[in-house]
Image 1 (tube, rainbow, N blue to C red):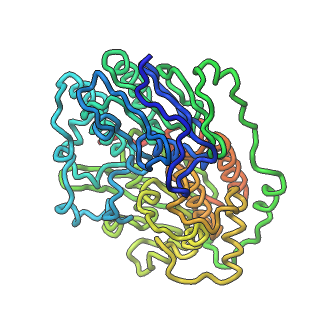
Image 2 (tube, helix red, strand yellow):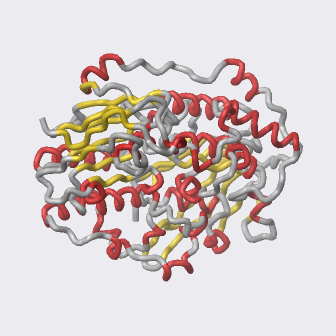
Image 3 (spheres, rainbow, N blue to C red):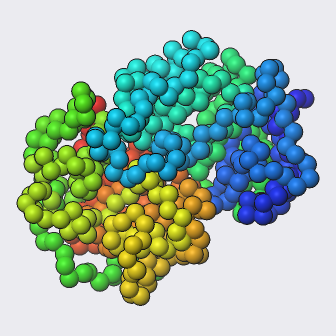
Length: 482
């Protein structure tokens, strides 16, 4: 049988990017593999070994891409990594850039970044699936995180790879698009020689076309098994992951002395947001009262993140809108930092922009001053609060590890601890469970539910998975795409 990829006793030369045991794995003709494991288990290191990113000590990776005419790995294997799903992480992106329209002229349009298609049938199918026509003339930085993911998938599939490796391809996509992508990948694997390797944190999301599973645990590449074998031995997730002791600690946190006491936390009056010809939000009236817990939903590109950027004071257009936060009208003299002091926030945009290679605890501490990076040394008692929240999220052992050396799931937990660290009155969680394994999803959901039981806590949460919404949700807002 033809092995497209074969690794025998593979050990990378670089000790930092080495699994605990030599890697043995094969991708045989006709197989489609899901690589599953907890956050930080070593899934990304395994992918880097498969793609040849890190040279091996003894036996190099063996490739046989026939019937593809090219023998080169970089032409046959395409890899969409987690961070790429939010656009190109080239360091030229800064956090508020998406909301600053004056930067547009320097950024390319979507149509300029898509390759020439060699297969017009495939191009038509992809454009229809992802609604690419309406995105073609948009500037790349104006795409929502879900639209960016659709763009990356289209761009990669148009290059006609022999092996497609995707890191959590379904997160950030609305339910309809997820189902369509499942179907499209299944069809492509039937009518072309394409073989797929999916890296999945959410291991209950394995599509039907997957034939085999490779579990990765504690930086050890497990034995390949059939999907049926894996499903038969998969352990159920506990009903609750947060311990009673940690739950009590959250509920008994002392309240700060500088709280806002207002009945209305957010008031938007006939708010409209436009970028060029495109209207994102039109005449939106919205009131969030103290203690309410809102679920914000809508298709990719419907304006959810734009709406949250107004509330968080990150969007310059918020000054031209009739917005009142914590009873204070925007533009009436208050500083952005005065508002942000009372808001804890995490989002895909923030994750994408966080390219700071600081120790994880410094990233958490940056939440105390709402900065990207740490420019002011926290006081000792503030560092204790940072360690306290890292412990709540189960990442106390990562405090001295550099942020960019963590797995994407571990990074997300660090950014969540950053959102909670100042015990905010308003919690804004935009896709907070992105990239988390099933255990950590359960844990974070428990933390959110417990935190929201405290007095006068208000929350707005965005997710494309209904089951991610905590039980405490009291209200919902659905945005339609204009």
